[in-house]
Length: 214
Image (cartoon, rainbow, N blue to C red; front, side, top):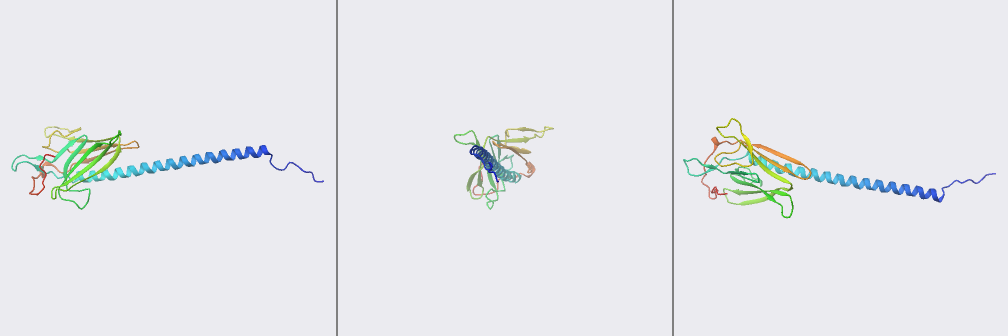
């Protein structure tokens, strides 16, 4: 005789199994969503860092192509087209952000406070000495801090020092630092200024040469 046994699941056992499976699905789904958000955040951070590095390479290229152009009367000590502050920098370069526009370019970097927020942006403006054409765009955006520092050394000093500004334009710094801090990372660019006073030259004859007031 074959006896009938309790081979199957009871309703209570099925309920427990379904509850456990549901909880596992919820946990796995939450972990998956958390992983996706973390990945998206990491990708966004990487993209932001890459864009920042690209912008800093532009700054580095223009500073390394600094032209020690002076304005003032011929035969007298001139003043360099160079102004440096913690929140801005203006100088002459042979490299343009827009590539084909070259020659003598007045480059101005300005740290601008973003409207309605606690962040700042770095804006670049270029003016051509040949055509007088001006262009501008944003290089760095939504940063907690953006600042310039300048390493200078007077002829009478044995050692130089870092400062937040260049007091006058009768000399140029030996090195320039650009510091930028966002919510995700900090980065600093240090660029030596290779052109020295011995290579300075006066205004060439150009239709739109800068007047030194900028």
